[in-house]
Image (cartoon, rainbow, N blue to C red):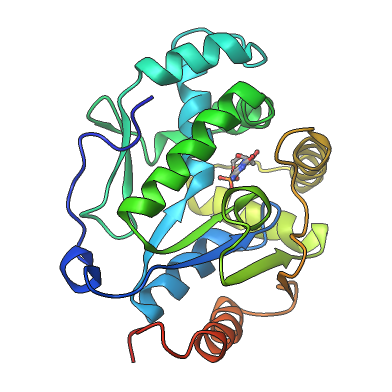
Length: 249
Ligand code: DC
């Protein structure tokens, strides 16, 4: 897998050349609003944004398209090494590309969501991803990165780390709203709740990089808070903890 190549230049490249590296991690289960708040937080602070779930989803898409068993870690690792998977950093948020095809929307579809937890549970897959995420952070050193293991495994030394959570019923309602907005009809809320619980269980119980609250991370319950409120809490904490980071005013 070649997540980094061909590399496109991001808007922030010039302005961050002389600024200090800052990695802020956001972890938590599906439906906590992680991606949205991570993207907003990055914009407010003038940092770049990395959606690591998109990388695992792209790996799941490769499994589907190449007809690879999602439990076959070694075969997946070979396919990932051959794939031309990378981000287009000229877009905000960055688009994920597979062999020059923009798969940003494709990886959100049901078939991908259905197998991604299995793919993400394979240690061979996680090893490739963790290496690539650290490599991305070397090239994009002022970064808000979100996922399940960013503050625990990938960037345990990040100076600011958040852990988001929310009631399962609230997370299911958010997911239903997303699916309806995406044009799906007949969405069964009970089924969505079961899917979320199943995915949580798989993500939390895998041996490699399980979803855990990183020690020392700031815990935020998003159940009763708007995106704006959550982002403001996080922004205040980041500015307070890193007064010399050179964030956007
Ligand atoms: O955040 P998301 O729903 O797009 O994540 C897709 C899947 O990838 C989900 O099953 C959890 C997994 N994932 C992971 O294991 N580690 C990460 N750092 C990010 C996502």
